[in-house]
Each structure stands twice: as structure tokens, then as C-alpha cells.
Amino acid sequence: MDARPQARGTDRSVARRAELITIGRKLFADTSYDALSMDDIAKQASVAKGLIYYYFKSKRGYYLAIIEDSVAELVARAGRHDDLPPVERVHSTIDGYLRYAEHHQAAYRTIISGGVGFDAEVHAIRDGVRAALIGAIADGAYGRRDIPELARTALLGWLCSVEGVTLDWIGRRGLARETVCDLLVRTLGDSLRVIEEFEPSFPAPPRS
Image 1 (spheres, rainbow, N blue to C red):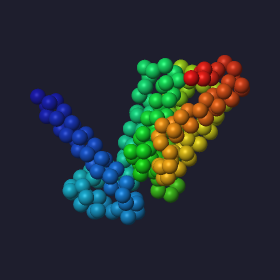
Image 2 (cartoon, one colour; image 1 turned 90 degrees about the vertical axis):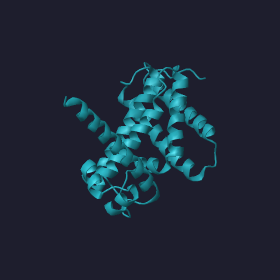
Image 3 (cartoon, rainbow, N blue to C red; image 1 turned 120 degrees about the horizontal axis):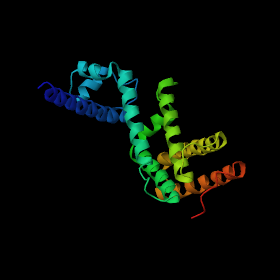
Image 4 (cartoon, rainbow, N blue to C red; image 1 turned 60 degrees about the vertical axis):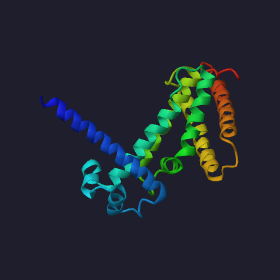
């Protein structure tokens, strides 16, 4: 008899927490971390300040939860094409990445820049995103995620260039998303062919 009310309460708690994170993403998109107090957040969310402390313990905890939620969405959007052939899967992964950055610019900038100043926890979250995306690209290119260190390093270098290109693109918007995607796919192809030269057992997918 106790299980059902507890389950309903848990469901409500999960929904309430998700709602607060959604509100926080909008707030931090428009206002800097330092400029928002917990009183401001509570007022904008139309909740008691104690409720935010209950779910997140502190403003920093709230901020990190928002970043983690944004990261989960970015990784999910970039890697949801496992049923496609390798070349199409890589293209769709990059397109999903760009779509996320295009529609969640503030969250993307926070993920890539590392948050407030030098924040070790936010940097660790960003590094987790990079590892997940490298895994998705490797899976698309090679059909496996366990790759040699040289391949991982080369893909990390390519991904860091993707971050720079994406930040510039969402700031300037001088090119269509499809053009940027094609550019990044082609530079990835170059990186994969270089990897093949060093690691012949990891051949690059054929050119499309």
C-alpha cells in the first residue's frame, strides 16, 4: 500500500526538478551566473527559494544540474542515428550537434567555454561530452568505440576545431547549417585518412 503513493511522489519530484532545470536554462541564457541570486531565481520560477535548495542544495548545484541536463541533450541529439550506414551516421551526428548549438546557444557556449571562470567540475562535464562524441564518431566510422590512442588524439583535435567553428558560426551566422555540416564532415574525412596512414587497421570509410 505504501509503494503507490511513494511512486507518485517520486514522479512529481522528478517532474518538478525537470521543470526547475528548464526554467534555469532560460534564466542563465539571458543573465550571467554572478548576476542571478537565488532570490532572483526563486522569483522568476515563482517558487519558494527553499524548494530550489531542496533539489539542488545551492546555486552552484543548480547551475551544474542545468549544464548536465544540457550536455545529456547534446549527446543524445548527436548520437541518435545508430540505424544508419556509417557515412550517413557520421553526417547525422555532426548535423545533430550543430542543430543543438543553433537552438541552445547559451547552453552550448557554457558547455564549451567551461562555465564560470575555471570551474573544474564544468570542465570535467565538457571533457565527458568530448569523450562521448568521439565515441559516437568512432562508432560511425569504424563500428567500434575502442580505438588506438593516436586515433583518439586525432579525433580530439578535429573535435576541438569543430567547437571553434561552431562557436564562430552561431556568433556570425554567415553560413547555412548544411554548409557548415558538409565542411566539418569533409575535414573529418581528412582526419580519418590521416589516422589510416598511422593505423592501417583502422581504415577510413570510403568517400561518399
